[in-house]
Length: 145
Image 1 (cartoon, rainbow, N blue to C red):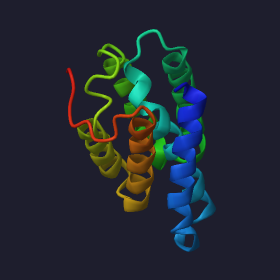
Image 2: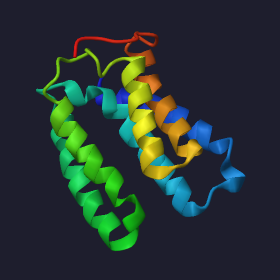
Image 3: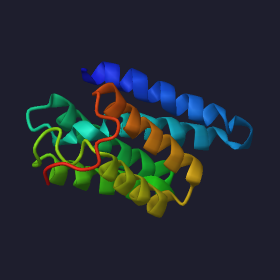
Image 4: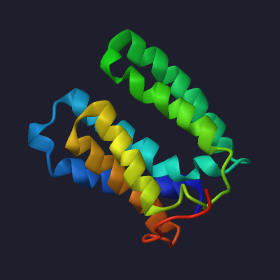
């Protein structure tokens, strides 16, 4: 699958999950939830060294860092850590460890530690897992590290 297809599948899963909790979410939380779904839908492909998407994500994170610095400082740590993780995991073999349920759980734990919100964690985990599902490896537990 290409990144557009992964994004469509992941965002669909993420938005459906958000709709389950729509009455309890503020507009700001909706925006954060959609952003998380966007990132986590594509996150498994940060291990693809030749991907233009990885560099696009790094540029996007930089822009989001500035946005959060100005308007929502409580979420700035998310994009700074995500930017660092993108650089580190980009050096790993494609469809290795990052394309596993173990990585999905680890990224979800990181998300919980950053935002302390189970709805956001659910959106992230479901969007990430949808990428594995679309790649035909929904139950892969681990890979090359």
